[in-house]
Image (cartoon, each protein chain N blue to C red):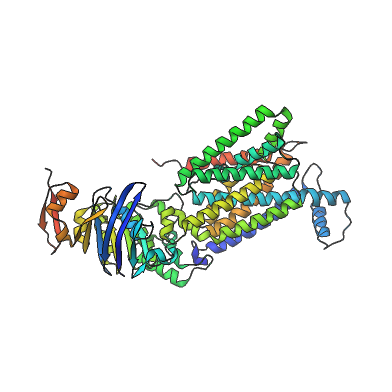
Length: 345
Length: 254
């Protein structure tokens, strides 16, 4: 496949992916070691191998438990969430032919927030499972609304984005309405915290579910990567190249919605990863999706794990919401994209 | 590869845009579609290329109804070159031409020697081989048009549809592009605005008015003073030009 890309491209991609996986492993290890209570990397390593039954080293049960039950699952969920959001961003940027598209332009996060608020404030259902279900239902409601408004996304990219903006506004308004009329101060704080995203409280079952969703989504997207490339010059042009445009668009929007909704329902609405990472990855591996999608997955994973570490150490004794950290990095990047995309005069 | 269209009609909501068009294109022929703005040239071209489904009527390519041919298989026979296609993505000339191999490749298949040969030949045909690594964004309008034709050629089609390929080009590039298309061993159908260019390069011309065919035949037979007056609402004088059978139109300022 070497000539599928610019000269020497495949080697560069392989090197890049290998490096990224090494960095990702180190980042996950660091995320597991760093916290209010720091644990030596050696202990982290032995805890993991102990759990996998490879070693039988003596480790304090408390450290074993912190590593395995709290931090490792958290770091791995962060990695998967970052990978998933980055893939969604790359897909939407290709389908909508808009450099500023990201999962949340389709109103998915706003819908998820409304669903979550219904659970937190109105008390529909109870417990964390129903919070996730509420968020998931809200996300899908928003997606359905956008699909209806944009005629199944057949009315052109701008139309779809406008429909997403409309859905976001509607659901954000609903969220604010519910919080201001029914919530108390503590609930409002809970909601805000949830909206900005947090990896606190994620456990192994979350990881297993997310792992399946991310792997299946990535596989479907890679299967359709060639077709995504054909969208470079628009929908009609893709059709002229033999791509079943309607089917591809439906499947990929569906995958994006499912993936985003799953992530948002677990860890909240974490912005900017989906916007920033595809651009960074494109800069390194080029625009072809067979290369871009895996690159997005690993870069997104690394980015999110590091953002999670930063969110835990940036302020003493408390965790800054992850969305704040990603936005602090994301907004300057967004500004650079805007600056570079300005009309040339 | 012959194309037969029978009683094609198509419209948006209640407005009919293409109405009851029948035409036949012989293998290897270069057919020009002309007509005033809004006469349905682009729409008819898309119906013929199978990019839109007719409300009624059918299109046959080599005796097969294209509605029955899967999209991907159709794209191995038929290429469509849009007018002034554009992208924001940072792609190279070679990337764009490689897209032409899309209908020939399965989802994860590697890049074959046949693919590489098709791309190299297409680039050579339009004289862009030396530019293959250049960023598409940095090309001029004429170069972009040539790259898109190369992409169409990389599809290895038997029929090529071109929607106003000479738009926004200077006269040198207009003539160069059309000469190139005429000399291809393909059946080609070109929507054109410039009547003199249509007369120079097309074997036959179809004149559309309000979505219907109002004249069809050789340039000499079709481009008459009366057609120009009735369809295009201009008065003009028609010379027999230097090339036999290729009329030349001189418009009068009135």
